[in-house]
Amino acid sequence: MWQRLAAWLRGVWATMFSRSDLQQKLGVTLTVSSDMLAALELWASLYANTPPWASDTVKSLGLGPSIAAELARATTIEMRVAVTGSARADWLNAQMQRVVSELRQQLEPGLAKGGLVFKPYVVGDTLAIDYVQADRMLPVGFDSDGHLTACVFVDRVHVDQGDYVRLEYHAVTAAGYEIRNRAFRAEGDTLGAEIPLATVPAWADLLPEATIEGVDRPLFGYFKPPYANNVDPSSPLGVSCYSRATDMIRQADEQWSRILWEFESGERALFVDELAFERDANGKPKLPNKRLYRTLDMGGEKDEFFQAWSPTLREENLLRGLNAILKRIEFQVGLAYGTLSDPQFEAKTATEVRTSQQRSYVTVTDTQKALQSALDELVYAMDVWASLYGLAPRGAYQAAYDWDDSVVVDKDQQQAADRSAVTMGIMPKWMFLVRNYRLDEATAKQWIADVQAEQPADLFGSEAGA
Image (tube, rainbow, N blue to C red; front, side, top):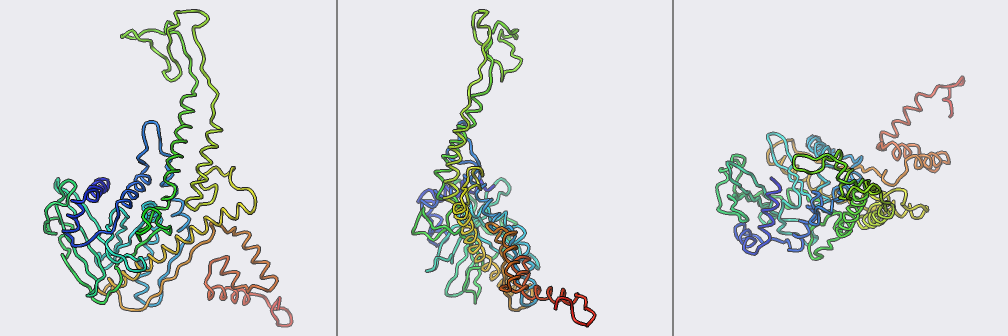
């Protein structure tokens, strides 16, 4: 279905008539340039392993999803989120834990396509999250800091052999938070005629318009990958995690295809005189193995009855060339050498290793900061919906995030260094537990108190080791 939606959106955005039609029916102005639309289409095709340069002779190496998956994994590998402070906070925390459980899978396409929206909505006495990828949203407004303040979300369904499109408009206005729903029966690349929301059963309970007072922030969280927009520098929209490496990804695919062809064309073969084989009903030679045997009309000459073909392969040079391209891609997307390339060719000196790891660490840390900002916005939106629908008692809340730093930190080395610091008396024991066992300060101090309480007393009544 989303392939059809993507094709329809490209049609809507491709022509001024359709773009004008969309803006007129919504009464808004879209902020997406043609360059950004073309880039988004390219990023999405790379993530789907269907790049525009793919052909019978050029095969995809799958670098788009590999890069996005690695960054999503490194960003969320051991992340923990806790919302605390009240009964409302406990309810919000329960909603957030469901988000955390599936965050890596949702973050991956968000990194690939240049953005992800977390949009909560009420389902009974709880909340569900709509994870809206960049190719399912139409940005409309941003504030002076580049924060998204107005957006159109696109929902398309197929019912009774017809395609229906719902446009859900969100905007922060002076009067409050405005939400509008409009439904259309799609006609090719156009929205077609407007229809009542009740035409589609899943949309029957939605209000055409609503304004929520006292809300001055979007009721969704917008994650934008932490890369400057090199496609349209004037746009506040996010870009793909591999936006700077698309040309080199094409080169890697082409080089990989050369390697595949080298092995395919270099397969051992026996060229045998066709007189050596029986004939089928059509008079053609019957080959026992079509992959190994080739036929030639050699006239039955004894010395040329068969010839072996076993060429020398050039795979080592080709693989070195591919590895060089992969290292450049790692540099462009902010990954350490050896993440995509062959580890045996990665940096060897201590300085090179440290610089390479630092690059990956900075990329992951920046991604975590951007994700944390989006999740903070999501918690705010959840809190608003909880108040509007009375889903949980009112109360204060605070979200705390714990990110693992094992991307570049050797845990064994860190623990050994911290142990030495404790021995030298320059680090308290509770800090050692916090840094190496991921405890909070209160729990770490309680651990130490419990251990001290278990120490046996000597004959004079003092504790051992006092």
